[in-house]
Length: 431
Image (tube, rainbow, N blue to C red; front, side, top):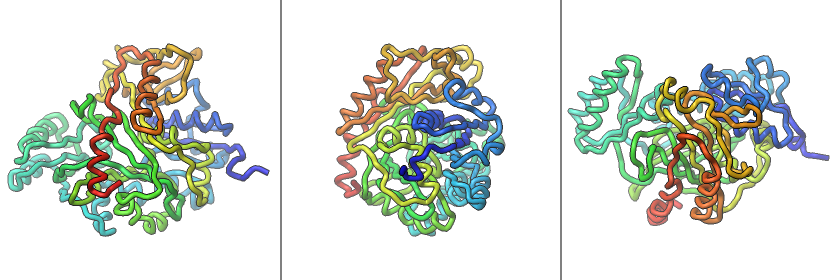
């Protein structure tokens, strides 16, 4: 007799932007019944022709054995469904607030006796500029709330007096005015940027732990604007000093909020310590696609077991996984006219009919062709795995070479950070 988690399920995936098309496809290919809902109007076409879509997710709850929420902002609904006994994978009110309210996240880090970088929240640009002039230093501008979704607005200053940050704040004041919302200035510190993340089953973290290195700038060698992400390298470990110093300390608190989902904490580390920067209390993108390339058990069953509160060890590959986005204009900017001129309905062409490691992002399928849709210009994520970082990179770039996307661009150095960063991390005793 099959274990209960292995029996095909009815799975409802509630998506904010359609970012989990690849996850929905994987769940469908495993034999589960899937229904996919996308909230944002401009993203509604994503997934058309790939999987069954629904116009209202609430009308499908009774049908579903498992409800998955792929973004922050759904915690109220998630907690109500859990209270009714429905298995849910997604954020809690507490974990959503950790990500969306930077001040709250910082206060909770301090409450859990975790060292943080000095930061201060501002409601106006003038107040922030006055503060920098009174306390000259290198700072990072970090938008809060909904504005933080526009990753190109995050700015990392290099000037020790803060002059470059003042210039950027003046520019934001002219272009955004009062619509920018609250933002933080965080003291900049040098070191290695690294994330640790794990799945949480309502009671405790599941192992192994995922360690990731994000590549956020548009161009190789960390040049250009911040994009949110252009690609990531990662591996899985059973033990991590960085995890023990950060997320592990929240285990009892997450259990109190009955959190069943995935959470990531991004840090800067150096010889002086570990400094958390921000929480991502949901799937990361492209993190979940690359994680899926490294998870060797069916992802639908895994998410169901987590939602049901089961304790188990996640089956993962040894070695490394890497992934790179292939994007088209106007990425990373929001310009619908440019998108419609250069990118909308452009065909993704494959030189050979090999689609392993190709994770569709903002695509629809028409007459068996993959077409770009949505509004951001993210076509697909390409992943590779290997026993060494070089092996994983080679597989990924071989797969990228099999894809033709008109006007497409991607970074050619995803994973290269590892070779220098790993030496530093070893020397600091953090690997």
